[in-house]
Length: 349
Image 1 (cartoon, one colour):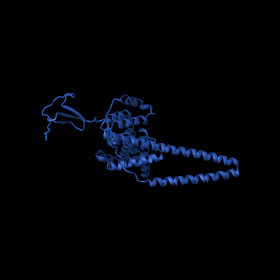
Image 2 (cartoon, rainbow, N blue to C red):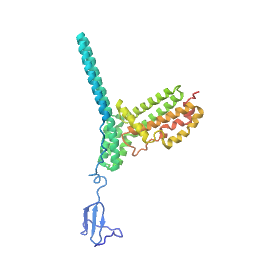
Image 3 (tube, rainbow, N blue to C red):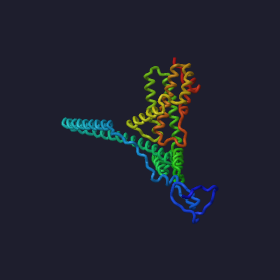
Image 4 (cartoon, rainbow, N blue to C red):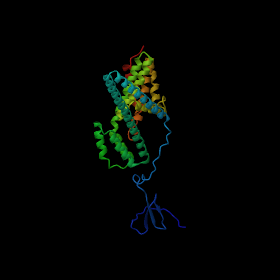
């Protein structure tokens, strides 16, 4: 049995040396008694990704609720169609011009119905596309999969292809398309080229909404007005943030996004918003000394800001890779500034 040991000092060998042999394996082994045996390692980015199993998502259950609503909706459409056909026939029997008028109105309603359905499906498809890009980016980074990152880059360019303000960013991505192999580096460039300005816009929208909620609820005379305005502002923030990042949610898409944002709030702590919010809420004593109603307004603004941060998280096409995720203080810090409390929010007696 021969003894295997590594050389005690660094050495240099020629590949054409008769004592050196090459083969494919995971690591190099040195056999002093049998000559030098070098085993090549696969390239980290190109070869190592080949043959890597793609993790499959968990098997989904049968969507019984979706089947129920789809079936009921279809039956309602059939009933409305039969009722409209009967009405048009009766109007033709009374007067032909009434029948033709009813028929034209029926066609107009049918066209409008298909337009609404098409818009809803388009919004849902675009949301699914954004979710697919985000999930693909996470998988590409986790596996350091360069081809997958390149595909995500192309999908991001396609997502913002129709927007003139992204022309410069798309040009930057095209310039380095064939010059980068690392998956994370490629996605960092895509993130900075296409999402940096949108991140600023989204944070500005959330901060403005939080400030408006604080002002309105601080001076509103009824609690029902506070609740209605907070809900209205949250819905508007979600729609505006989604539009900033390229989404076009209809009614169903909006409800889907709202559920995702609420789920994100639940996962990340809900009302307990972390150390940043704890530090902010401790400052509510200053607002409470000015007015109890003012303190309620500031708290409503803080809740709106927290929901806005969750909306950014569920609407952004890429996870935060090279950019820093928005902190709660980035969108709500102005609410507790002394200038805001002293000047922008009048005391409610």
